[in-house]
Figure (cartoon, rainbow, N blue to C red):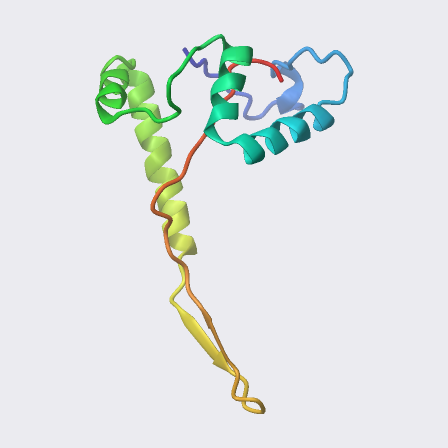
Length: 132
């Protein structure tokens, strides 16, 4: 469960925030290797790394709609409200960023440049549960 820590008005708001224990090793190289592996091997690498770091043996990286519904229904109502509020807030912010398509024509060369913003059909998200 998420906990709420209200540090408004504190002299040093970050002072009470939990910090992960870091052994001093620079993780950048390891992360680059993992990213390169996923780029080269795709879902097979994701499945292997999920087993390695999270101990979860999966057959696919796709979560079916029924499982998403079950997970949502099993989620604490307070967390559901918080997640819904976050989605609404993020959506409002990004709707504000939307721009109309534009076009520029260079009067000297006649070269035409168009700009437009389009949503993607599908996106993925990986939330690590362990340490890389």
